[in-house]
Image (tube, rainbow over all chains, first blue to last red; front, top):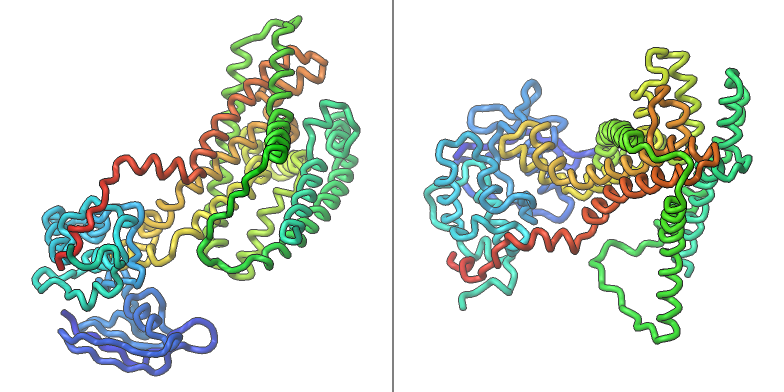
Length: 174
Length: 360
């Protein structure tokens, strides 16, 4: 894990910035939850971290790399930031395997690695499923498995975190 | 009824626009409509001025209709009630007299539109002709029609792609202006585009005069709106978050676009191209004006035979045109019918098993 530092973030579209003078220091290994009313800029912060938007004035530091600063800019494809959008945003034309393998281009053991992360999120047998056949919670789990730097060694995500959005039809054991 | 009224008005204005710019039918019936007069005055003299003056008047008339249609249709959009989940329309059981009337009216329309031309063409064919049908000539014309139209549709798709991406993803004032301008092909009669490209190539690029390239360009200008419409809607249906996700997974901008947005809108883009191909094969006036001497397409062969009242000899060309145009039309209905599509995909998809999901 990498330490994340944000200082004096100012971002948003148009004349009025959504975020203004935001400072943030997240030490390695810390889980941070950002709360706020709707429209307060939570998503804008995440989008700035992922590199989808270019902040108007900021420095964002991952570890010892300045990914967004007055003189430097690292594009999203080189930041290796994982994003799990609320709706999962799986690629609808690829099956679960294809979705997870999407970020593993050039990996020496793609098949093995995909099986590994799918097992980790509890979707071991669903590699051939299409996203349309999954429930909302399952889609999010695939999205999690798809992230770059998806963890290799950790406990499966607890139900309380990921099962909350699951459809009633698939929740609960028989 | 108030809901349907603007759409119906817009529809009839659109019909007016098409009638105004139609060339083939008025030429066949020898009616001195604008388009035919423009063409004959262009053919009669080397002076293109009189034809150009008439063309300008025609464009003005078309522009008025086009503008009116947009105004009326613009009002329709305001009456839409949100984007909530669609409920299935209630089916109305037609009691027998109503049902018979409805079926009769609809089949009558279909017979009038499809049956009558085909039947009369077949009859013409069976009556025989003074001039025997040259199969090689027919095949050459078919190949030419297809080739030139394919080229035109490729140009149109290429142009529509950039305009469609702009219109779907970047709604700024200038992109909207660009989109409206590209829709002007809708309002421009083929005669006018043909005439203007003749003048343009003669003045600016004489090397292009009467080449396949100029003809393909004319098709692209004329039918760009069809292609842009299809491209824009299919791109707008792909959520931008997919492209962004692809970026976070290590794809460079173009690569991410190709693997998500482009890949997912490919069917729609291809459908737009197919639509251009279909329409371009039927195009007559611009083809007549811009084609290389000796390049005969199905439409021009058909036309030149009717010019000398050899209707029997024209029939096989008309039938081939219908047959060739029917293939893309059939492909289009297949591509746009979700029922068929899901049935095609459904075969190789394993049934989801709910048991495998609840282990976490």
